[in-house]
Length: 441
Image (cartoon, rainbow, N blue to C red; front, side, top):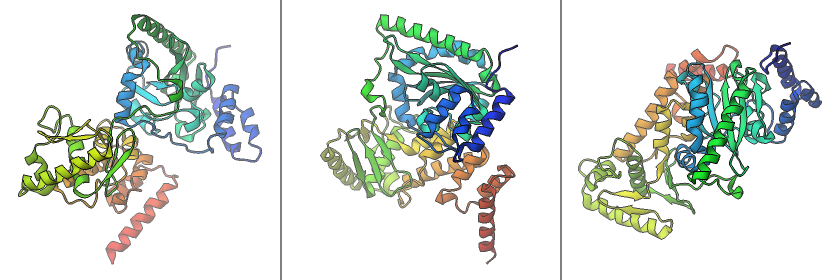
């Protein structure tokens, strides 16, 4: 008799039946319908979450993620993982992911179609796939149990992952400390009988590479255990989406800027975070360019300099170590910019992450020419991506934004791509009817 996989039809029928009784008073019977490793994980998951469609939270923004991965011990083994898992999986529809000890995905690789399918369930870098965040999944359950795990289809606690199967194994450092998890995700082939052996072999090779690298002394030290449940130290970040002021987070605290100061900080952060738009190697804007962006073509730099002087004092008085330097004008250290992060995520096809970070129009009350231009670029790029490429769940989430409330094209697109039995169709139809009635008045 051959070996079976979790994707076996009988096991999937049992898992679907378990979901059917999970919300009942006698929900304990659900666990008896599952494989033991899955049933135990569901019990743990119920301690954190209610059953249903649970979407993994984005725990690390793109700016924080890049720095965190660079300094993480697992960055040293990505070439090994690429050689042993990613390259053999080209054009198979499989994804390979590496997560940290808290279940946060640090790195996801695969062909474009596979990446796009996984994006619909937020299986993206920065997302939290621990059992605490999303319930049973191979990455989270492998971390919870300390051993290799396969989870297929309806065995996932969250309905959002029922179209996927995954195999994962934990990875440890030379000192035995848990560093994270290695995972392959895709269709039923991701839980084939050989998949767990394949992932385990790749983990063993990666752990051997870590031991050798530790002997050479060139592996980053793991973060202290006391930080295992905290976000890594952050570079300064500027948040200006969906608000009339600006929040600067500077490591030890936050600073709120309003009016012209908010506009200046946003313009500088936007251009400093661009790889293409700034004429200056270190980023920033000349006095003339900043004056035009802030005040228009007839602006006088003397007016700008007065605002710059006041903002410089505000930053210094805050005591966060953030300076406004000159020639060109720039913030040091350069902050990340939420508007730029959204645009970057859209460009990478990571629409769910982009939408999670997009809280609304950039400084919506600002009339500064440069702010208006950025506002239109970010909002327009997101809308275009939603209408052209987003899946039904992401598009209907986009429609909840105030700026999309009366977007007939977006509503019609949602109606076209939503499944026939989706309860969201009724909401979309109602909004279209209301807009049509308003138009007829």
